[in-house]
Image (spheres, rainbow, N blue to C red):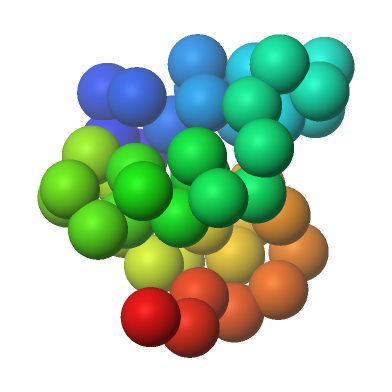
Length: 46
């Protein structure tokens, strides 16, 4: 897991981050597409 995975998951689960913010994490290579799937429960689509 990336260094940011746990933090972003916590933010998303607590509704502190939107789906778009999590997508931005993939776009900026902060998290991987696989980690995105684990966080939001759906595949990343660019």
